[in-house]
Every structure is written in structure tokens, then in C-alpha cells.
Amino acid sequence: MNARLPASVVILLVTLIAVYVAIGSLYAVLTPSWQVPDEPAHYNYIRSLAKGRGFPVLEPGDYDQAYLERLTSERFPAELSVKPLQYEDHQPPLYYVLATPIYLLFDGALLPLRLLSVLLGAGLLIVTFGTVSTIFPERPALGLMAAAFVAFIPQHVAVTAGVNNDALAELTVGGTLWALMVYLDQPQSPPWPIGLLVGTALLTKTTAYVVVPVALGAVIMRWRREGRTLAWALKQLAWIAIPALLLFAPWFVRNGLTYGWGDPLGLAQHKAIVEGQPRSAEWLAAYGWRGLLTRMARTTFHSFWGKFGWMAVPLPRRAYQVLLLFCALLAAGFVVWVIRRTRHRSIALPAGQAARSVLLSRCLLLALSAALTFSAFLWYNLTFVQHQGRYLFPALIPLATAAALGLETPTDVVPRRLRQATLIALFAGLAAFDVYCLFRIIQPNL
Image (cartoon, rainbow, N blue to C red; front, side):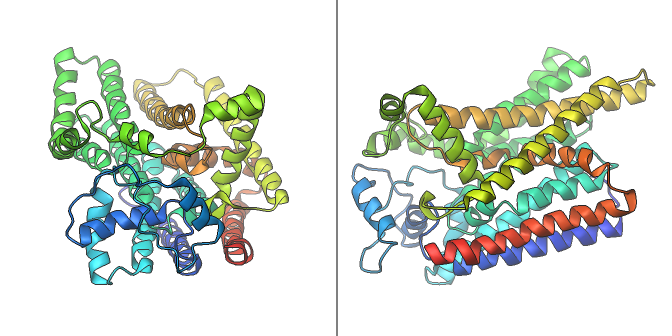
């Protein structure tokens, strides 16, 4: 990222973050208690630490599908306790350790814990801007567009205004991506900070584990592009792996001793105890491949943009149609950008060739991160019916980068002096849509 940003860019970035925090805080205040997916189970993990019980252990009985359905259908009435919901007890510990002092300071109040997630979401906007501005240092507007895209997805606002480890996971993935973007073009950049970021991601959530192969990919890219020796590559990997393992090893050992060395992440234990959760094999038998894939695509798209509460409150149908057209416009614009970059690769000076090589490496690394997140989503859905778009949010920075590049093509037809105002109006509209979703969709229906 440029050391000196234009004052107008700084003002717009600060304004963007302030607007996001204001809207996210509204969501945190006005969304009814427990009406964010899995919020009670995450809260109970924090409660366990705050009460001095140590890290919880995932056990049979921690997931009761019938009781959970009753809670959600009756909108979590006060007479029904959420304490039995303990099915997130296998999660890595970092978010819960950070949240425990807030729980203690505010005597377990839900709102301060939700606001922690909002602040983590604000950090993600900074990281998004930094990552994209590092890739395109002469075009800070792209970083602003990418950050705005991340900021104003209604479902993302709703999730990052709840008690969960999602925002921290996205922040650690984004921070690692930013560091890797710098690493790809800074021969003197030490790799050990990347190792610390990878270790932090490993301690946050399994959806953040995509950073491991992405970091490996960054080393391989530099090794090939710079013509380094194999010994150099192994040394770089060691500098990344050792800090990561030092951070993660205690948790890995604890889980191995708790769940068995064949299940050091507790995932097999989680799969065993979530009885009653819909399985993909059952849906395949009921709907066939076409029906299953159609439902998966539709529900994932809807819940990526907005399907609130426990996937029970959708947006109006017309809103999804408009959003689909918006996504098609972004996709078409991005394809045009790729074609233009491919067709106009004229022979240039070595410095220009080196810059293009770095740009290509960075774009490929973003694509790899997104592909791994999508693959993990598909893998999870081979077993369980979890067509939730929020599981794709760890790929928001690559998606936002593509969206920002996709917006360049249609805005080319706008006079240059009006482009900034046009983009500000577009994202102001999305921010207004977030507020509309809260007051006209979420509050009346939850």
C-alpha cells in the first residue's frame, strides 16, 4: 500500500469505516437476542471460560436438533434456556479468549460481545483496503471499492454483528493475504510474521485454514519467479511453519489428548454428535442431483446477500433479482478486465515485465484462496446440507477485488469527473439497503 495516500482517499476510507460501524452497531443493538446463527453456542463457549471451567469439551448431548428447532421456531422465548446449546465447543480458542474479558467486564451482557465482532469487521475493511491497494498501488479507488463491497453486504453485516468467531477468522485470513501480497514483491521481507499470522488463523477457525496452502503457494511462486534454490524455498517455509506451529501446537496436543490423535481438530466428534442435522445424501435421494444442486445454488446465493435469523427470513424476491443482475454486471465487467489485460500485454522493459509478473502472482494467490474456500464449502456440503452463503465469507477479499475490477468497465462510460460521485452513490445505496433490511425485514420478522 502507498505510504502516502491522497487526503481524499483517507477521508473516504474513514467515512466508509464509520458508516459501517454505525450500521453494524444498529444491527447489534436491534437484532433480537440469539437471532444470529449459532450465537448461543458461541456465547456458551465464552461463558465456560469466564466461569473458570476451562476450555469446554464437545460431548454427546451438546446438540439437540429438536430443542434447537423449538427455540428458533418460537423465537427464543425467555422461558427456554440456551445453555444446552454447546455444539461449538470444539472450536479453536482465540476468539473466545479475546471475548472473555468483555464478558467479565460487562457481566455477560450480549451487546458488548456483539460490538466486539463489529470492531473486528471494521478491521477487516482496513485489511481489505490494504490488500487491494498493495496489489494496485497506483489505484487506491479499487481498494475503496473493495472495502465498500465487503462493508455493505447485508448478510455480512448481520453476521459480524453477532457473537461468533467468523469476523476474527475473516480478519486473520485477510491479514495473512495482505502480508503475502507484500511478501511477493519484497525480497527482503522476513517470512516469520506470516508464520505468526498463519498460527493465529489456525487458532481461530477451521475455515481460516486456507491460509496454509496459500502461504505455501506464495513461497513456490517466489521460488519459481526469482529462480531461487530449493534450499532457499525450504528455509522460507521453515520460517513460516515454525512460528505457526509454536502457536498452534499446544491446542493441537490438547485436542489430541481430548478427542484422540485421529481427530485433533474435533471435527469427527462434531460430525458424530450433530444427530438430526439434514444430510446431503437424504436430500439427494429426495430431490435427485438436479434438485439438490438447484436448491444449493439458490439458497447459497440468497443467504450470501441476506437470509436472516436462522435462515428463516429472506429478502423480497425482487431484491434477489436485482442483486443477481448486479452480480452479473460485476462478473461481466471482471471478464472484460481479464480479457483486456490478456490482449494488451505488449512487450515492455524488464521492470515492466517484473511488475506484471508480481501482479499475476498476486492475482493467482487471491484466486487460490477463493478456490480453497469454495472447495471447503463444497466438501462440507457433501455430508451436511449447509447451503449458507456466510461460509464463503473467508473469500470476501478475492471476491471484493474481482467486484472492484468489474465495476471499472461499466463506469468507463461515465464522464471521469462524475465517476467518483457515481461510485459513492452506488455504495451509499447499498448502505441504505442495509438499514432497510434491518428495519423492514429483520426487526418485523424476528
